[in-house]
Amino acid sequence: MVATDKIFAGAIPEIYDRLIVPMIFEPYAQDLADRVARFKPQNVLEIAAGTGVLTRAMASRLNAETRIVASDLNQPMLDRASSRQPEDGRIVWQQADALALPFEPQMFDAVACQFGVMFYPDKVQGHKEAYRVLKPGGHYFFNVWDRLETSDFTQVVTGALEEMFPDDPPRFMARTPHGYWDQKAIRDELSAAGFRSITIETLEKTSRANSARDAAIALCQGTPLRNEIEARSPSGLEAVTEHVAQALAQRFGSGAIEGRISAHIVAAVR
Image (cartoon, rainbow, N blue to C red; front, side, top):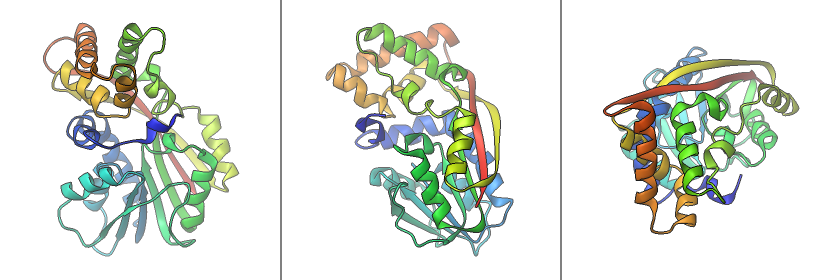
């Protein structure tokens, strides 16, 4: 991972929330919230809350006594999340680094992370921090994207960018969002952090966008991929987005498009 992979700021939070969340995150947030709610936790920590899609899903399922601390490394993402969430006294928004959580040991019944673990520079340390703040018997839930080849939209986008920048293609999608798919590595690193009763389930869904251009804007402008594109072509973001949109339209057609996507759903117990 490179430094810019963690920067979700500027125009990114709004585009991310408006286009990416419904395209790929919403169905997995509903699934993960169901898994958390099944154990009726009273204190939940969410790591890498982003613009709050999982926060909203959990809030709709957890009871009135449950306290949710929704955290993220990037304050602009939390600002967007809190603006989207109806007033709810159960939720506290807090900027936090997943590798150095600002919480006392054994504070939470559950820790949940929606597509954020892939961004940890040190996965074992991140898992150790989740372990530290969980109560004995507490549950750790997270999801991560499967390998790049299982994501139709992202694979096409990555290929289109390789055409435009053959000498130095942007590799954010393969390197980070789709960079933590090896189930053995995930199990080994959770075990190294102290977790037991580890389960991993692979869940396929369908990603949908209103148009190929919407999908291109979402991925090229609403993620840190934007930072890589602008580093290579400071004034070329729109031209690159248009090239990617044409590649997506050629593969998936005009009008609304859809494609396969796959993720691993991970659960472990302290």
